[in-house]
Image (cartoon, rainbow, N blue to C red; front, side):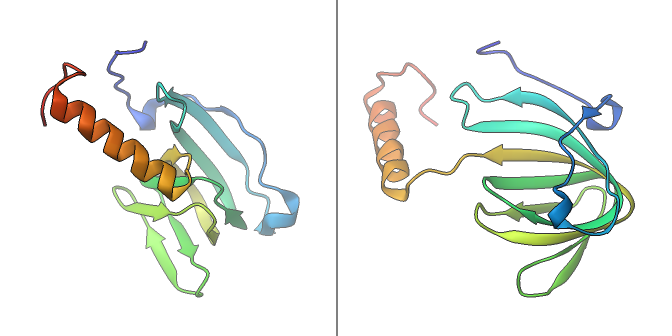
Length: 145
Protein backbone atom coordinates (compact mmCIF):
# COMPACT_ATOMS: atom_id res chain seq x y z
CA UNK A 1 0.00 0.00 0.00
CA UNK A 2 3.02 2.28 -0.31
CA UNK A 3 1.71 4.31 -3.25
CA UNK A 4 -1.96 3.46 -3.01
CA UNK A 5 -4.48 6.29 -2.76
CA UNK A 6 -6.89 5.70 0.11
CA UNK A 7 -10.49 6.93 0.04
CA UNK A 8 -13.03 6.53 2.82
CA UNK A 9 -16.44 7.62 4.08
CA UNK A 10 -15.94 8.48 7.77
CA UNK A 11 -19.63 8.40 8.67
CA UNK A 12 -19.90 4.77 7.45
CA UNK A 13 -17.04 3.22 9.44
CA UNK A 14 -17.72 0.59 12.06
CA UNK A 15 -15.52 1.72 14.91
CA UNK A 16 -13.79 -0.53 17.39
CA UNK A 17 -13.21 -0.05 21.10
CA UNK A 18 -10.72 2.57 22.16
CA UNK A 19 -8.68 3.20 25.25
CA UNK A 20 -11.09 5.08 27.54
CA UNK A 21 -10.59 8.70 28.46
CA UNK A 22 -8.29 8.68 31.49
CA UNK A 23 -10.51 8.70 34.59
CA UNK A 24 -8.52 11.63 36.03
CA UNK A 25 -9.37 13.66 32.89
CA UNK A 26 -13.15 13.09 33.11
CA UNK A 27 -14.96 16.12 34.55
CA UNK A 28 -18.57 15.06 34.03
CA UNK A 29 -20.46 12.00 32.78
CA UNK A 30 -18.97 8.76 31.52
CA UNK A 31 -17.75 9.41 27.97
CA UNK A 32 -17.11 6.32 25.86
CA UNK A 33 -14.82 6.58 22.86
CA UNK A 34 -14.46 4.38 19.80
CA UNK A 35 -11.96 4.67 16.98
CA UNK A 36 -10.65 3.24 13.74
CA UNK A 37 -7.24 3.90 12.24
CA UNK A 38 -7.74 4.63 8.53
CA UNK A 39 -4.21 5.06 7.23
CA UNK A 40 -0.68 5.84 8.39
CA UNK A 41 1.88 7.74 6.31
CA UNK A 42 4.81 5.84 4.84
CA UNK A 43 7.22 7.50 7.30
CA UNK A 44 4.87 6.78 10.24
CA UNK A 45 4.87 10.47 11.18
CA UNK A 46 1.16 10.96 10.36
CA UNK A 47 -1.94 8.93 11.06
CA UNK A 48 -5.58 9.48 10.12
CA UNK A 49 -8.26 8.10 12.43
CA UNK A 50 -12.01 8.30 12.76
CA UNK A 51 -13.00 8.84 16.40
CA UNK A 52 -16.30 9.21 18.19
CA UNK A 53 -17.34 9.94 21.74
CA UNK A 54 -20.57 9.79 23.72
CA UNK A 55 -21.81 12.48 26.09
CA UNK A 56 -19.49 13.77 28.77
CA UNK A 57 -16.94 16.41 29.64
CA UNK A 58 -13.20 15.81 29.88
CA UNK A 59 -9.76 17.39 29.60
CA UNK A 60 -7.51 16.38 26.74
CA UNK A 61 -3.77 16.85 26.33
CA UNK A 62 -2.29 16.70 22.83
CA UNK A 63 1.09 14.96 22.53
CA UNK A 64 0.96 15.29 18.70
CA UNK A 65 -0.27 18.02 16.37
CA UNK A 66 -3.91 17.21 15.65
CA UNK A 67 -6.22 18.52 12.94
CA UNK A 68 -9.86 17.68 13.58
CA UNK A 69 -12.82 17.79 11.20
CA UNK A 70 -16.20 17.07 12.80
CA UNK A 71 -18.37 14.85 10.59
CA UNK A 72 -21.34 14.25 12.89
CA UNK A 73 -22.69 15.64 16.17
CA UNK A 74 -21.13 18.51 18.05
CA UNK A 75 -18.59 19.35 20.72
CA UNK A 76 -17.84 22.47 22.73
CA UNK A 77 -14.08 22.92 23.12
CA UNK A 78 -12.61 25.26 25.73
CA UNK A 79 -8.99 26.32 25.23
CA UNK A 80 -6.42 27.06 27.92
CA UNK A 81 -7.57 30.72 28.03
CA UNK A 82 -11.12 29.65 28.95
CA UNK A 83 -12.58 30.50 25.53
CA UNK A 84 -15.28 28.06 24.38
CA UNK A 85 -15.94 27.24 20.73
CA UNK A 86 -18.63 24.99 19.23
CA UNK A 87 -17.51 22.58 16.52
CA UNK A 88 -20.18 20.97 14.35
CA UNK A 89 -20.25 19.01 11.07
CA UNK A 90 -17.79 20.36 8.51
CA UNK A 91 -15.87 22.50 11.01
CA UNK A 92 -12.13 22.17 11.49
CA UNK A 93 -9.81 22.84 14.41
CA UNK A 94 -6.06 22.54 14.99
CA UNK A 95 -4.60 21.51 18.34
CA UNK A 96 -0.81 21.91 18.54
CA UNK A 97 1.26 19.32 20.39
CA UNK A 98 1.72 20.36 24.01
CA UNK A 99 -1.64 22.12 24.28
CA UNK A 100 -4.66 21.09 26.36
CA UNK A 101 -8.38 21.71 26.09
CA UNK A 102 -11.67 20.71 27.67
CA UNK A 103 -14.18 18.85 25.52
CA UNK A 104 -17.90 18.97 26.36
CA UNK A 105 -19.93 16.55 24.25
CA UNK A 106 -23.70 17.08 24.74
CA UNK A 107 -24.84 13.87 22.96
CA UNK A 108 -22.12 12.49 20.68
CA UNK A 109 -19.45 13.61 18.23
CA UNK A 110 -17.62 11.88 15.37
CA UNK A 111 -14.47 13.38 13.93
CA UNK A 112 -11.69 12.72 11.50
CA UNK A 113 -8.37 13.34 13.22
CA UNK A 114 -5.11 13.84 11.36
CA UNK A 115 -2.31 13.25 13.86
CA UNK A 116 1.25 14.32 13.11
CA UNK A 117 4.36 13.66 15.15
CA UNK A 118 6.29 16.84 15.81
CA UNK A 119 10.01 17.15 15.38
CA UNK A 120 12.74 19.46 16.60
CA UNK A 121 12.43 22.66 14.53
CA UNK A 122 16.04 22.70 13.18
CA UNK A 123 15.61 19.09 12.06
CA UNK A 124 12.37 19.94 10.28
CA UNK A 125 13.95 22.94 8.55
CA UNK A 126 16.91 20.79 7.45
CA UNK A 127 14.51 18.21 6.02
CA UNK A 128 12.64 20.91 4.06
CA UNK A 129 15.89 22.31 2.63
CA UNK A 130 17.11 18.85 1.67
CA UNK A 131 13.82 18.01 -0.09
CA UNK A 132 13.83 21.33 -1.94
CA UNK A 133 17.38 20.72 -3.18
CA UNK A 134 16.43 17.23 -4.37
CA UNK A 135 13.40 18.67 -6.24
CA UNK A 136 15.45 21.48 -7.77
CA UNK A 137 18.07 19.06 -9.09
CA UNK A 138 15.41 16.70 -10.45
CA UNK A 139 16.96 13.72 -8.68
CA UNK A 140 13.64 12.46 -7.33
CA UNK A 141 11.96 12.25 -10.75
CA UNK A 142 8.79 13.80 -9.33
CA UNK A 143 6.77 16.78 -10.51
CA UNK A 144 8.58 20.13 -10.10
CA UNK A 145 5.55 21.53 -8.23
